[in-house]
Length: 126
Image 1: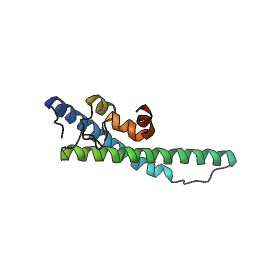
Image 2: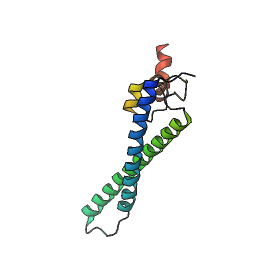
Image 3: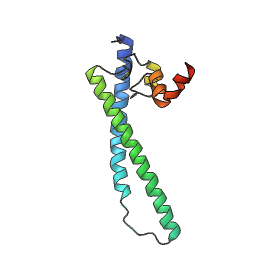
Image 4: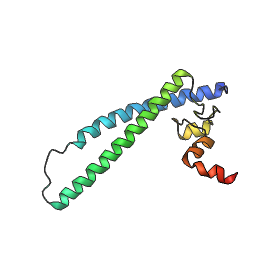
């Protein structure tokens, strides 16, 4: 299993604080969005009804995206506690700090993430 340097550990501390703050913000936003989903009045005409439907659909999609992100953040925070953070879930390689800066809850190194995203890309190159 790869070792994590002290510099990376310090960076993980900063990422943990950042993710904790982001998790708390998401929890607040999700709670607020839940209240917005409930329609408490009937639209006046067809255009208003269509607008209301589109708005509700966008809100539901936003809520789903925020919930997924929240689950990913909570999973990353658990990996930090277990000492598994920064290690690829597929190949056990160290995930680069640059990747973790860009996507703090990343589970896979860039190579494995690309392989999962497009499994045929690496076969074609061989």
